[in-house]
Amino acid sequence: MNLPLQIAWRYLRRPTDRLVSAVGFVSVLGLVIGVMALVISMALMTGYRGDLQKKLLGGNAEIFVYSVGGPIEDTKQVAAKVRGTPGVSEAAPVLFQRALVTTERNSTGTETMLKGIEPGRGAGSPMIAKIVGPRGKFDTAAGERGVAVGRYLATRLGVAAGQSISITVPAENGGSFMPRSASFVVTNVFDTGFYEFDARWLFIDLGEAEALLNAPGAANLLEVKLAPGADLDQVTRAIETRTEHRYAVSDWREMNHQLFSMLKIQQLVLFIVIGLIVFVSTFNIVSTLIMTVHEKRKEIGILSSMGAQSGMVTRIFVWYGTMVGFLGTATGILIGIVICWLITRFHLVSFPPEIAQVYFVSSIPFITRPADLAIIAAFSIVVSFGATILPSLRAARLNPVEALRHE
Image (cartoon, rainbow, N blue to C red):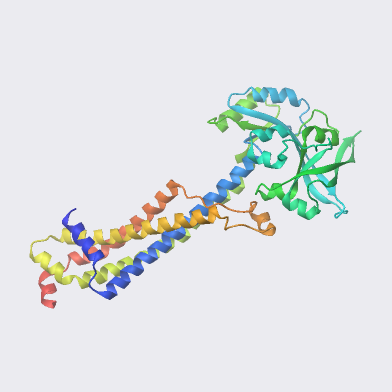
């Protein structure tokens, strides 16, 4: 350990003036609060974006293939082509349509989205497994047609597992759209944590959806899952080529571009705004250093009279301020990580339905990424280091004769 660092550590560890000690404590505390707020806010935005993306991909897919003019008539043939594309692990047809649901307690009807899927997909998707239910299929043990309903929608409809609902959809018949209805038994009330599914969607077997909509063998789109490590852009282009550009091909980024762009901007703005807390807290470090320089002027004079160069005096107080910044930063990051873990572990940030409708999720995990922590630490330490420059130069300009004469 070099001499300036040793002296700075002694000044920090054993301040002789109570006022200087109190101001030093306040400067560290202010930095701790600022850094902690930064860690929590970044973890909030990172967790929200990650959880939303995970649930979007868990219930849907990375790539969507669909026909602009209507349903995909030759679904099996198109699906086979897509499955043969390098990088594709699954290409599953789905059929969806707006529907009107009536129950005994809700005779006026509630508008929902009906989606027909292959229940076997639950084996490779935890979210679809939650939707399909523990039996792994939609029909009941007695062979009745089953439907999975989200918990918010089930509450609104007033139904529970085992009860019947009536689903009415428009279906093309001879050039006109005539309503078709069928009764289904609720086989599962699911809770995915994704409000869009839990409050607005019904899920049934793809075959039942085709029969209800009078569209045998036709699907609205293909949901394509990628193999691990596959490049999204390359696979998208390959699917367009294999399908001879007859179908529109989009990925989840395009379909949610505005939402995730807005979240990135919000995270940047939040970092800037809360970063001002860290910046303001450095004024306390400046105050602490100025008071320390005033308190230690006799020792500075002695060091200078013994031959210490001005650069050495400058380094003493640069080290002093940097250690204050490092201590506040490390403590703030540690406390922030613990708070984020507690919030995530015990689901302390959860939303009622009216709020979940706005944010699309029922609860938010607070995720701390090493990259975010590194950026926060670097920003805090750099700002703290910058706050040491002026007081350190002032200490170096002290006249040793005047400092000793004052004493």
